Length: 396
Image (cartoon, rainbow, N blue to C red; front, side):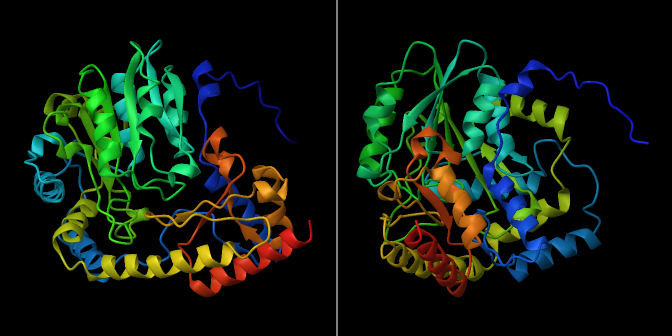
């Protein structure tokens, strides 16, 4: 006999919580595979490479050496020292270990920063299309989500005036992301400096700079971090991690770098939620940052080949046009000529073509008229996926 459960009385805040559609599409694709369907996976933002062997071995050695216990909530001291040195070298600045908080993945820094800084009545500017958890977390903490459009005509780089025109006395946080998910867009030095010049006059505004893809750049592009500007550094919260560069998605290892007094508050949130990040993964993180980099470099070189190939193929598909991204491992083709909505076409491509991709609207309303494909899959899989997409579009 099935028990009838009473109504679930959720807190009102749960109605403001969004999701990450990539995992929903992945679940649907896996369900189709369970029915015997052959699915090409171009939806999930996860490198298809294994974690480099030297990092895996460091993690195994750490387990055997007893790094299996609780550690400090803000991260093991040697790990924070290593991260401080790494961030300092890459951004040309001096970073202290007290400014580093190690967390299980990148998302906690988004969540904790907004919990610590934004509340009802505050406004948070975020990129749209952009990583969906930005908007979800802004709304969850009760702040107002202020959408900043990211436009194809700008090469999916941030237009400084789109940020500046949205600043109000209530602005509390501005979120920046370069290289960007879902577009692969990269914001250049001049564009970034124009934004920062306006924000320097507003020391009450914090800047959450998501730089998780900073090592995935192509065609000689240079990564420009707002943290490198000494005049605004104290307003910056740097978000970075190991998942993308080192194919360590399942290790759940990320970090934030920020002024020390804010780091203390973020550490309190760690104490109240996760207690600490797994110690053995942190030890593996030391090897990732200081050890042999050939695995990460080879992965990025392969992504570059796939990037060029998938763009060429997509631009040959009737009804599609695809900008060549400068970073990350995504393409964001324009599908407006098909006359279909992003969501409807994404479903049709999955159900009829057996290709899992994401609707542009999974990343915000400004993503209408686009799809996102991840090229974190092999060239043969990409070729087969685009062939199937072409077949679906030719049947419309």
